[in-house]
Amino acid sequence: MAQIVQAIILAAGKGERLRPLTADTPKPLLEINGIRPLDTILDALHRNGIRQICIVTGFHHECFADYARIPGIHLLYNPHYDTANNIVSLYTAREFLGNTIILDGDQIIHDPSVLSPCFDHSGYTAALADGPTKEWLLEAENGRILSCSRSGGDRGWRLISISRWDEKDGAVLRECLEKEMEKGEHLDLFWDDIPLFLYPERFQLYITPVNAEAVKEVDTLQDLEDQR
Image 1 (tube, rainbow, N blue to C red):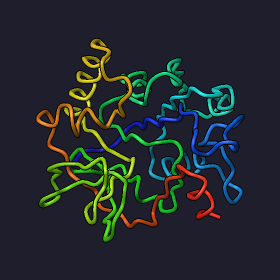
Image 2: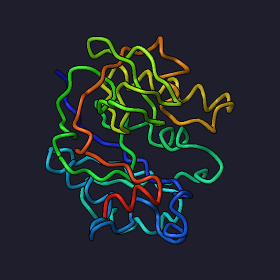
Image 3: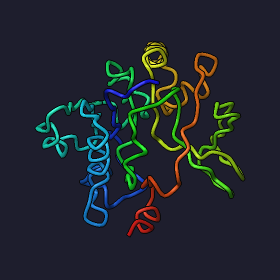
């Protein structure tokens, strides 16, 4: 069994689908029911003993300055946040890969156990979707991820943006990130495209099942309204 020793939180995006609320405030720092998504993530990480944390910022990066005063937190700036997708953000934090948990900064963690530091295999957190969804769906057999659909479907494991990477897979992921950055051809992709679509043969990934209510992603104004 592997043990998470550090976390990467991707928080560089502009949150376009939440405009005008995100015009001056990064999405992870929006107050929802009196609390910010990023704060729920940090609280859950700390509850699980994970204190070495890298936060990748971009849009209004100055808003994150206070977090640099928290012991164990490192802020990294992605200067390409407005011209490339989050593949560049993870590349910026590639030195932190290895026994690492990777999260998006706009998630609200309702159950801290979803960030447990113990894991058997590298892979993604997922919630069973028993109806139609447009979100990424994973097909798995005996827990092992076989394929992923970007366009969703009627049933499957809905990918949640929480993933764990052991030392071996973290090194491979870093290698693939560096290769893609050198080529410069796929900077418009999500970093998840690397293990799921570009280099699936390099990884053996598994799902970690969770209850759909344990973590909520806030991507749209409707998502925000659903949390209130």
